[in-house]
Amino acid sequence: MLVILRALVLLAGIFFVLKGADFLIDPAGAGSDFGMHAAGIAGLASIRADMTAFFLIVGVGLVWGGWARKGDPLLVSAALMGIALFGRLVSLLVDGPYDHFWAPMLVEAVVAVLALIGSRMLPHHAFEPEDDEG
Image (cartoon, rainbow, N blue to C red; front, side, top):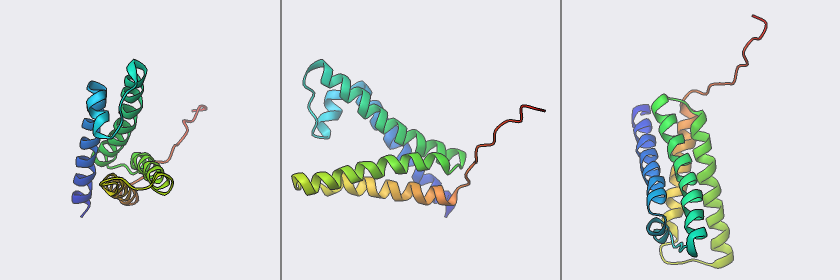
C-alpha cells in the first residue's frame, strides 16, 4: 500500500513540476489553458512568476516527500492545494459556476487528500538544533 501511495505522490509531483515548467516556458499558452490572458509584458511576467512558483512548489514537495519517504514536504503541497481549492469554492459562491468548474476542484481535492495521507503515513523529521557546546 505504501509503495502505491508513494508512486501516486511521485506521479502527481512530476505532473505538477512539468506544469510549472510549462508556465515558465510558455506563460501565454499555459495561462490560456487556465482561462488567464496576459495584459502585456507585465501580465506575462506575473503568470510566469506566480504560476510557475505555485506549480513547482506543489510538485517539488510531492516529489521530495514521495522519493525521500518524508511526510513534511507533503504538508506544504497539501496546504497549497487546499488554499487553491478554498479559492475556487469562494469563486464558485461569489461568481457562480462555469463549464467544467468541478474538474480543477477535483484535482486539487484529490492531490490535497493524497498529500495528507502520504504525510500521515510517511515519517516526519523534527528540527533538532545543533549543540553549540560540543
